[in-house]
Length: 420
Image (cartoon, rainbow, N blue to C red; front, side, top):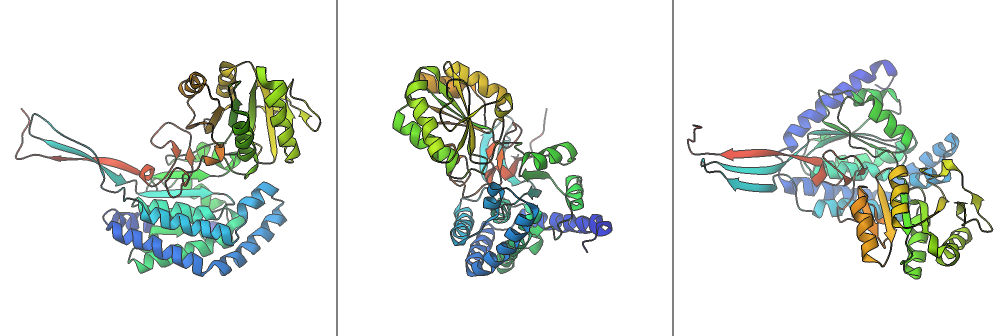
């Protein structure tokens, strides 16, 4: 049932099944959810050859759509990346269970005992593009937090995502949990996304994971609450006090390790006093590494292109970076406040006062000092995996792991207690 006229009915059925599964998951023992993820990890590894074969079909589809090299890289699965999926599933399985965790407890003079405890959000809708590993990450984190999830992967990752989803369902089956706890929308039709965004009777929150077009669409049209980041416009400020070797290592890694992820550096800000020394070394290093540098005044060396106003606040998601001279840390802060997407920003400095000022006066979800922005990732934060990086300020912020996919409730206990 995938033709357009039946999509509302199909999505309604997914929603009903998810809501029923969420009610059961809310009190399912932690051991069951852990077993489901462990079996899913084993199944993904056992079926890695099938998954890679399915991914080849997706890569062919992506080439036909004219996807960029960065998007094709996001889509690609090889044995090493499947090992990463398996490791992520096992890491989430091994985490402490967040459901029922007591966040605070106190007694009142009235005789009441009050506890604030973690409780699942309910049903989560995840809409994502290209990266098929999100199928495993999102499914695992939602399940770990006691939520049911409806996954809507990108059309280009349809075959890979379907096989990974089947492995997750195998885990649910082995753990005697409802198979509807993790559902994958079985169509590429975009009408399914429109339905998911308005299913307020069944879905408690939407998490979009993808480019500006997707996230903007979700934020404009969703009637369900949204955890989102619009873009990863990531800045690195290199202070006059920066250690040269640290700066060279961090900037190269932050830009080139993987250019298509949201933690990749997109803008390099260089203190005016080091333009002719370390600044020039950084630009030459990037050019030599094959990066297209859009350089502002004072940084235009052989092999660079002149920066334009459009380069500031741009998410390239490619082997391209903008570079600009600033007077000092306050100049960097002003630029970042104007152009940042509040995702991740970094300072390279040995001067504690400079780093403290950068941390105090900027309010991005993640601020870093002397470390590659490619660490802006839930797995690297010890969360096992993440469902995305939230840049808003309501509920979840930064890497969204299992704990961030819970709410809380108050448990109040008295002893025949009445209010005067």
